[in-house]
Length: 297
Length: 281
Image (cartoon, helix red, strand yellow):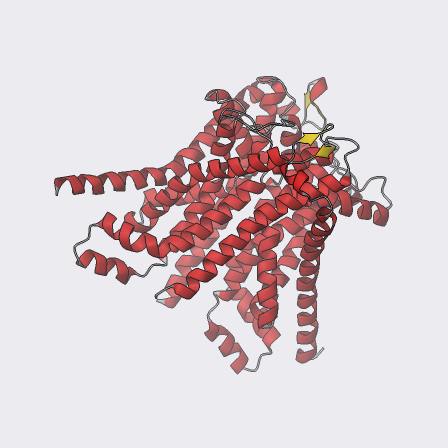
């Protein structure tokens, strides 16, 4: 008897420890990012970090071109992926016949499973030449090419989360609207979507979060020129993103050099951005859960 | 515009968007399948790269990715399933569990390249594992953890409460109930989540860039402290770093990688659908 209660106690502690490990890892990640980036903040003044020129070989560590590059590519992706993803989610949840749903859902899972390096590869070989011909730009490796591929990568997240949200709207809402004489589209647009809006918002935030952190695809297709995009037309020129900079340069820097530490500065910025986006998405979900508990109880 | 007409327009636009997505996916998968098929041969799958990677096979990269996937599983599955058991079976809703949940959400959102930086800082440099299979597996394992925890927890919570109540009323202890009743029922769901998590890890490049991946290493690793080639990194290398690379080999490598991850996807789907048919509640 004694032995088994010790066993029970041991197991409970062990799984609790496993649970705590998630917290430990987040703290460890933050700690190591801080540890390796602090010398970067010490070596390079904040003014320089916000400079307009990223030339590490000449000791210039202005992050502005990289931040602007990431923003441009992600904005471009969002403009394409948000409507497309929402429309696809509506299609799957409300419009499509059963057979189309059975085709589309596994296909979207396939898209989610395609490794980013494979998408980057296709982007380089197939998409970039087409972009070059269509836009007449000197190269097809542009911010726009990156946006197109990132939109594709964000789609599965947006579609699946938004579809769940639309699915979760009680059937009585739809029945009520249809009984009042609304068409199916009016029901979808004016009743179902507003009821699902917080889930849809979450879907969009998570999709954009995914796009910001994406590395290999953007590194392979955006051309990696560290210049600040100033006009909309710069969408069709090469840019360099924060993630691609880390991936491309970390392999070549001397350890503990200023360049090395500044790359960690970029890393910790990415960590904080993704943390804020995910926290915001989680808060929306928590709040929604509480509200629906109130409504349903 | 009448209500019926606007419905027709809206539905047409929505269907068009869905069709666009389908076409894009089929185009990508189709292009790789058609172009890559020509490169596939027994020599390609089992040979080592030769002539500056412009000839020969990709066997070391395939083995490397297998090893890394295994290492990821060894790291992430016990921790992930343990954490899920804790969250679903033991914990009360408290500030503490909420902290764990926020940590999981945060882990899930961290960009893969940041995991690479972390692995470099902690495992490669601080713990002195060097660029090694060990460092890469640990990095990929931590990255996979949130996927496994959340899917496993969902699977555990799907087991009806009455199963637990009956087992406990028969005199089983809490752990006996979990082991003998809850886990077997949740196993297919947990397995699906594990496979999907590993699928993602197998295709990742950014986390292994600085922690394990070897540019060119035409032999097999002999211990977990060795570097190894890996399929995703190899595809990156031969499509961006090697001038004059035959396009056939590039597509062939992409196809092998795609088949590797998609076969895991199919496996997960099979486990899930078999389970749905068999389940008793």
